Length: 348
Image 1 (cartoon, one colour):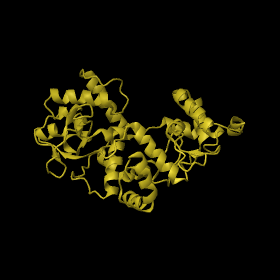
Image 2: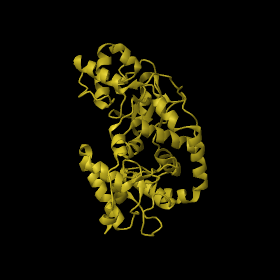
Image 3: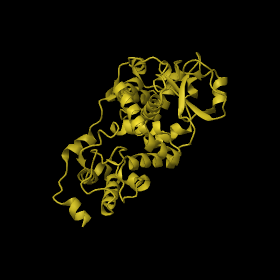
Image 4: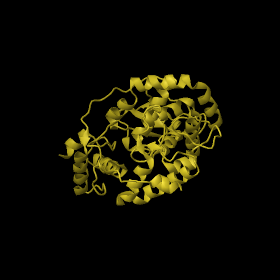
């Protein structure tokens, strides 16, 4: 019965296939990405949301151990606090993408999960979402609704569109299951000394806060780091010219939600600002964005020089960053692994 209703007069959505095929023309750098997402309007709306929903947020935070301002920040980035949740038919989107051979397995699994949720009346048959099948204020895929969705008010549904109790509890439950550590910071802005060995940066390189301090690393405002044996990594999303961040294990939890470092830093920074924290100490850099073609050119050139970036795809991933770091080190540049305009100029 559910399948009959869901698939009645269903037709493919060719616009969705175009959306799935298209990629952004340019790779965004840290400042371009973060300034768009942590805007004054989003910050103001986030603080207002925190204030208006304080009672429910605090109750959720107490139960799951995730701070209220962190939950609000996630909703800010995912759906602009529930103001943009997508208006595509969930079944039609997922069925179209499941039919397309490129990622058929993934979307078939999500389509089946959505139908199961509809069969149990957990979500409505006419549910709307993004073109890729993400739902509600938290933009969960159907399998995530099954795994992490919470019916906080015990009405038999997981309403991620309208019920704030369900929305906050589902987001908090997801983060808790991903490993969020209660009472711990995500990290902080850092300041790196001159002549620092940037080969030590990156998520894979961990040291205690005390060890970073011994190497001359400071807080972003130039004051001393707190004494701590917390394991942490030093990341430089725009290389040695840009901001630096000392990130702890809750940052890795944020990346469990979305594997993009820029996304994770945006959530983290927005959450700090919503809480009442100030702007970053680092100054914004106006650097030309690299196109996909530019990045492919860098990848091809590095491959020809013997630095393995894998198959050139125009995406500045971990393998390309590591190849870049090795190349920079070999020719006497700062080995920060940053794929930016300066690297493009050197390789041309």
